[in-house]
Image 1 (spheres, rainbow, N blue to C red):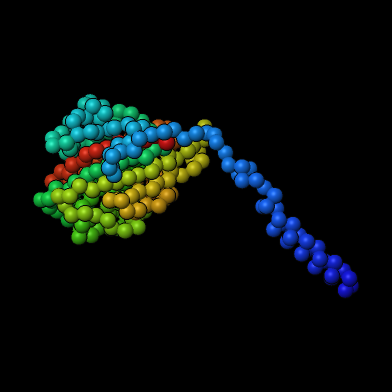
Image 2 (tube, rainbow, N blue to C red; image 1 turned 180 degrees about the horizontal axis):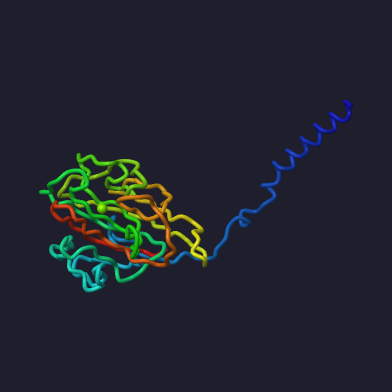
Length: 257
Ligand code: MG
């Protein structure tokens, strides 16, 4: 019995020694590879500037990349001073192009003279995939929540009525603010059954507010989120019906992933 115990201990020790020696037998080159080579791009000169491989959706001069969501005619928001301003009378606008997974940069400004409270204060939104049914897609909320409380899963940086932002990173009205978004679209099988949830990461003014968040479905005002099969979709900007002064957007670009 004692011999067996000694033998076992010897075998275990030998095993440890062998394992400890294994990495030394590998050459560094065995864990290095050279393909595929990542494409070379040129980053923007400053934070927020479009990199060389971005699709510029709005450069401050025109709405050529956008159409009205309700009738697909030319977008009718106001363009001035290198910004586009919501036209509540003509409604939401959306991109002509469609996207699946992407990186998005977008900037917005709540007017300095904004009025209203709660959800009726600079309400807009970025539908990360615009859909022609239900809630109209998956909304990243845009709202003035600088000292303006509302339900927390509906404040700026939330996935509307689903996911509370990690922090409130709002700047004051009158200041330009940024969202940087990584969107991973939901996947469906050929029968329309959901294979994987959408996921979203959001930086608000450079601060992480959604960290690879699972998106549970579309984002209705009333009711639970749900999914319906879709493919590549436009990005939509909301013209919310509240009575507060319309907000503006600028410097919008996207990188399909
Ligand atoms: Mg909204």
